[in-house]
Image 1 (cartoon, helix red, strand yellow):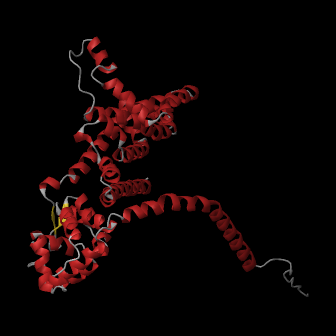
Image 2 (tube, rainbow, N blue to C red):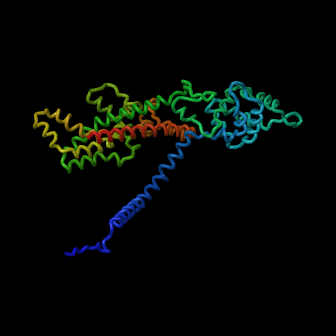
Length: 423
């Protein structure tokens, strides 16, 4: 009996061809997806990433001395920084000062060196005005005569500390601003040491910023949790109405809300008048221009950012879990605390993170309703940006605040991932 073998039809695609077509289709989908998000990615890159990166580089840039005094920096390259430098350094200084005299570079140089030693600004200006140095009968000065003339012009040029300030800032990159933002500095030999007590203020400011941010987060959680729970128990129509009331602050300017709290919290304001009227107090409470006013106003402004994550999580929790626990003999409060509350932890974590990050970056509210001891890091960033035009210090403070925020977010992300893996 003859057996017939049926050959595969030539029109049937092979497995390899199907795989190629599938890969091609997936590649087209990826390219389409990338093209769709490309405008947004370019927008974020140009509007946010590039400017922030450019600003953060200002925290370590140190071009003023290296570009204004290149010959002096080169002459000090092999200096041991113990005794006054050699005569060649004085010759290089005279040449550099002659070149920058009367230019914008002189002002920038003087301002930068004045950060190192108070009074350096006047020394630079005085030296630049006296340039060029001339000898008798307009003869060229020898290096020793140049040194003598410079020291005779101002005795501070014989002080090693002024030369050390130039030598340690000879590079284009310097940790000066970052160290200053951490209450440290480099001594004359380049070693990192603690800053002077009268200049060690920034760690205290960072601590104050985090304390205020943590306190506002706790207050927002204490107020937002029961409110979010109550909203989640309402009918959909009533819940939507209450959420509109919660979201109304988003439609009002922060400045307007702060001004409203100033009116309410002042000595003759509505809050004090109401407390006096019902007999709780006999004299007005100090609720403004102190930490109390900062806590009240910031908590009010940031409360919606706590309520929204909590409400979204609470709305998704089935009510049958609590009823099942109660039906099995658990006390209603124990059922709420042991069954319901743990399920809201993701909302608590998300709301706390959001409120804390927003709180530590606040500027307007503490500036308007707080006192001198209630100002946060953002206040000093604005001060150095708009007041003293010290971009390096402003970027260093902002960069450290950004680093703290990213570290906090990394801890939160790691924590949530570990919870998910355990779940």
